[in-house]
Each structure stands twice: as C-alpha cells, then as structure tokens.
Length: 170
Image: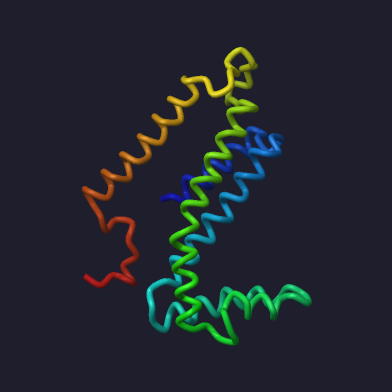
C-alpha cells in the first residue's frame, strides 16, 4: 500500500513535469532509495535461514561493482559471510532509516514550499506562492491525517489484510 502511494506520487509528478524542480526531485529520489533500503532491511530481519539467504543474495549484487565490489560486500557483511552481526547491523539500520526518511521528507516539503508545485490545470499559481503559507501547511496536514486515519482504520478493522500469508504464524 505504501509503495503504491509512492509510485502514484512519482508517476503524477513525472506526468506534470515536476522533475524540473531539481532540488525537490533529488530529495524525492533519495527518499525513494531510503524507503527501499528500509524495506529491504525489514525483509531480512526475522532471524533464521531465510534472512541469511536473502541478505547473501541481495548484498552479493554489490560484488558486480568493478574494483570495489568485493570490499563493499565484506564491509556490509562485517566479514566473509553473512552472520548474526550482519543481521544485527541490518536491524539497527531498519530502526534508524525511518527517522532519516522523516527528515528527508521535511527537506522535500521545504524545497516544495519554496518553489511551489505544478498544478493539474496548468494555471499560474504565483499569486498563491507565499513562503510557508498556512493554507499550504494545512493542506499537507489534512493529507497526512487522511492517510494516517485510513491506515489506522485498516489496521483496526482488518489487521491481517496487508500481511503475507506465507510468513503468517498465529
């Protein structure tokens, strides 16, 4: 659900040409990479044979980087093989990265409020561009509240709806 929202956001902004706002777009790309990294760290978290395999397969892709690949893999693994220390390191990153994503989101909004955003009608919105105008801030707050309320309702009404049945142990 979360990644669907992100992909819709990216697709809409590609359609309306928001990539022309270099700073806002660059921070958005960084946010996307951070969110994907956080999801990967969470994927390999449950201790057992599967996380060792997942961490080994995915992080071994780093070895394809010329000259630096082998050193990067050993640095990420913390040795010559995936071990408990690797999963502990991934758990730490999985805990810290959402806070970094939150900070990057604030920077993303800061750049967006400085430049203004594209609108679907293509009308000039220069008259509305007042830095950090309360209406823009309230619009963001209401959007966040609607998203949070929908996720809370989803969690309270049907908590297992977005779960993976293959990994489910009641």
